[in-house]
Length: 102
Image (tube, rainbow, N blue to C red; front, side, top):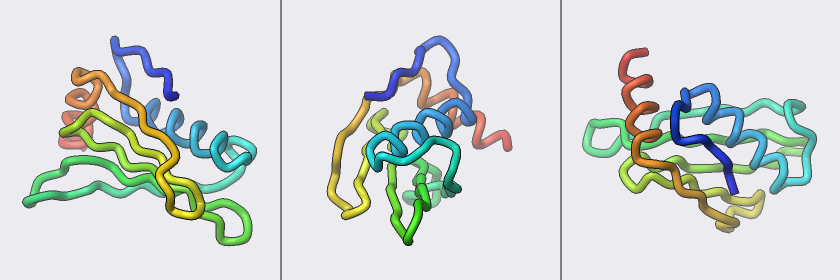
């Protein structure tokens, strides 16, 4: 489970926590493989983030951060859902505001 303090989380902290958890799920060394992020758009408005960790031998581990449901869903390299974690509502709104400002 992802451990995020609900007081203040910025986008970089979210990315670091997602990267760490994806590495744990894939039994990979943290900070050794590139991770890409994309905004998820629904109805013309950003509603989440898609994260993809590019491991060795074309292994890809993914996570979806859904701001409307305040959850992060983690998927293994086989595309099967492995686990989900809840984000505090205040954290989702902080990250959404930070992304809008960028």
